[in-house]
Length: 94
Image (cartoon, rainbow, N blue to C red; front, side):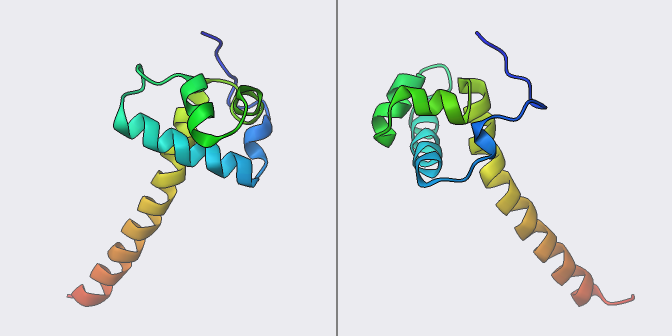
């Protein structure tokens, strides 16, 4: 398996509707099956894009999985911080 260098800029830094379609399809495939059961070809077919675009945007299945995870993780962290601020305000200074 080809390892990707997280410091090397790739197409994953580019925002596009195709990239979002790939992430949406990958999230569904990884959630419905498992990481090991999914192939990039399966995700490409589900998203309606060619396999080359997956490689352009993500480079590897591992990098695609990380992008799917990070996309949701950012929203979770933001919501947790909002709840934390609310809890601190309710607790007051006591």
